[in-house]
Image: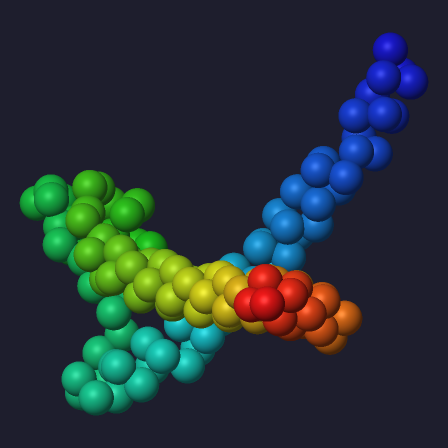
Length: 135
């Protein structure tokens, strides 16, 4: 059974998936930092210093706190600011992944076009065949 597990774990697909998950987690952390540390502060500055991550709507009359963390301790809250930050985060990740997939598709099309082009020898043989057919 241990031998079967080693065969399974060493397959190319499993290793590729593991590498993809690790790179994806690191990429997610980078994008989250970009959103939280670069983009949202700029949006906050444009909107007059608003920190969106701290915005919430209390769903209980017991909630009197000013910060989201304290409000969650007091009762039910609708944390729409955190949700907005996560939506921006997701949008950036989706856009970057779209651009990466698009670039990879372009490179693949270029490679296919290069592979599809006949060699000089094939071109010459085609010309000879066409000349023979014309006679």
